[in-house]
Structure formats: C-alpha cells, structure tokens
Image (cartoon, rainbow, N blue to C red; front, top):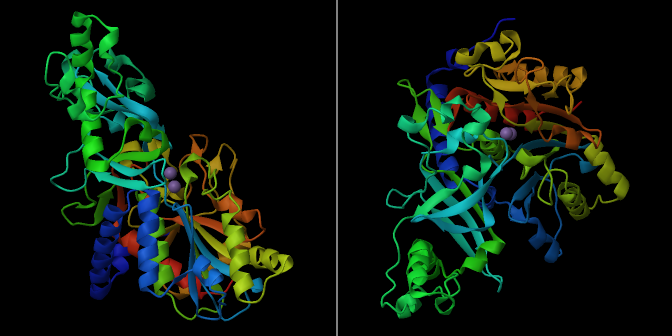
Length: 492
Ligand code: MN
Ligand code: MN
C-alpha cells in the first residue's frame, strides 16, 4: 500500500502552522515534566478557555447544559475535561485519552546518604528504562515534599540555566574492560542509579563539634558522645557533605531529612525540548511518551466547538506501571466523574451512565515505535509507523499473540478511516514491532471494559523511553488535526 509523507501534503500556510504548533508544544514539554506539572498546565489552559472546575460547580449547586465546559482533577495527577454536546450524554461521548506519566527515576523514601565525600539521593526507576542511558547526563529534580503539617514544598531544580543539575556517574572507559563484557541490562544496575547531589563538606566549626548547630541538622546521625576523638573526626568527615546538603534543604526549602518520607521527587533529564535536524523537521525532548498525545489531545479539546456528542479529554497517570493506583486508568475516577457530569446535565441514572460509557467512541492515544533503519530487523517494514508518516493507528498492541491488547473492531476502523479521509488527515497503521520480539500495553483495554469502541492511536517516536525521544513536527501537527476531526465526528 502506498504511504504518504505528511510534509509533502502541506502547503505554505500549513508548514507555518506546523512550526508554530511545534513551538507551543515545546513550551508545554518544558513546563510539564511530571504528571503534577502537566495537570497544572492543563488546568491553567482549560480555565483560560472558560472551563470550570467540576467540584466547584457541584458545590455551588449549578447545572450543565449544551456548550458548557468543566474539568475534574484527581489527586493532582489525572484530569478529565468535558464539553457538553448537543445530544444527550446517554448517547455516548467522543473521548480522547492519553497518559501524562513518563519513565524516570523516583527518589526513594530514605534516599540521602554519603559515600567517600559524595552525597547521593537513592532512586528507584519508574517504568521501563534502559538503565545505562541515564548515566552521565544532566538531570533535574522535580516534585513535592509534603510536610507533616500538610504544607507542600514544590521543587524544580535543574531547568533554569543558572540552576545546578545532578548526575549519575559511570566508570571511565580506561577501566571499563570488565564492565563492557557485561550484558547491557547489567552494565548499570538499578541500585547504581543514585544521583550525586553534593561533594562539599559543611564547615563544622570547633574541634568539639560545637559548630554543628550551624547546619541545623542535629538529627543527621552524628552523636559526639558515643565515640572516641579519632573516630569522631572520621565520622564527622564522612557525614559532613550530607550535612551540608541537609543544611541547604533546611535553609532553602524548610525541610528536614524525615520529610523525604512523604515526598514524591522525580529525577528527569534536565534541559529544554529542542528542534532536531538541519531542516528542523523533528523534536528531541524528554517525556514525549506520552505527553505528545496528551498535548495534541488537549489542544484539540480546547479548540473544538459545537459538537453533536459531548467531547471528553482524559489525561491519566500511572500508565507506565500498569495503569494502577487511584490516579491510574484502572481507578473508578473517570466513571465517577461521568456520573457527576450527567447528574449536572439532569440525565443521571445508573443505567444512563452505563449507556453513556458503552455508546462512547474513544481514541486511546499513546506513542508508537517509529521505524529505525539502524535496527531494521526489529520491525516489519510494511506494518510499522514512519516518522513523518502522519498520525498512527494501532488496531492492536500487546505481546506474543496480541496478549493484553484491546484489538479494535474492523467496523470501528472503517468508521475512523471515513472521518479521516473526509478531513484529509494523513494517517498510517502500524504494529509496535516484529512479531514475537516484545510489545507493550496502553490504557485502551481498560476503557474497552465498558463495551465502547476504542482504538489505539498516536504519534510515532524514535528511541522511545530514552532520556531524549524524537518525533516529527509534521506528525505532531497532523495528530492534533486528527483529534479535532474525531471530536467533531459521529460515532458508530
Ligand atoms: Mn505510553
Ligand atoms: Mn511508555
């Protein structure tokens, strides 16, 4: 079958639009490197477009009618947006779904330690990563520390040019003969992914250790009375870098070591999203899986007007670890919010909620693997996505015999083809990679539990799950156009 390159389909004004959209997408990526930052961004953008918070409408005893726009946030990590359509909701919605969590390193609950003059934060990786890709690159620290009194300290260190960054060390090549004999999965092991956060000992003051108070970290583990003088000097030398870090945390953020217990700190690649290639045709950035689909879905949702069916955009957390937890797609959050919205439109009954969900159509968006000529044997060239090939549809995902897949119906695919061809949206169909080589899942199968029509789709990504992932600007723009066409369209 013939494949069209999206770039070749664009006229001058579309090319300009593609660049403008890519710039806006890049600033989103820079502002939203964690699911919490993503939700903040979405809420601000939605409110600017006249969306109201669902809980507020409920509290005020309000109601919803055609054209009204509401959003609901769950635990600061998931968000659903609704734009009420012409038809009753019981006839179903058109839903765009994507996930806003990305692979990264999470800081452990007791993370801070010192070893031979380096202070480290211990991490546990989140999602599927090639661990060796995370060493020797600049890293930033994002997240929240929630103190016992309920106050939240937000951290974002390493993104501004004058911020410090963090890093994980790797063995110098000169001494790496043995390391290089290891399997790639063992070259850097999970427990070696600890980030270096300091190297300068705090100045303790007098011999008797009385200067310690300066660091404001009496509980940092050093007990002067228990040890001989010689040992005392050693102990002090060993902990002094860690104490220095605790001192900075105390002074700058008002947090103690124990506060790490109730923190969610994410270590991500530092730096901004960039244009890539002399022709500037691509984007290289962290977290495009799946924020590329989240952003394009969000934009389509914000721009669409006057739809027959209620339009919905659902951006969820925890996909990378199996859609678990209260903010993952397996949570009842979405179903509950649909019930709340229908209550406000005056349509609520348990049966109507079920009818609404069962009659809905969904584009479950996630990134697809782009064909990589350097690893040609990993793909089936006929059934893989190409960078620049347009929006991607995956009839199925899963692994080894489609296991764990949603596998959309042919009837639904035909319906989607019709909508996309009418609106001149360039699309391609793909599988993740060669049969029996591996695979992956998405949130599609969870929404399909309601009986609705769901298909996996999204944007092709080169080096997916690497610290820096690549996409085509044309695919990003085309996908946003596709989502708009879908929201405006009918359902089966
Ligand atoms: Mn994904
Ligand atoms: Mn992923």
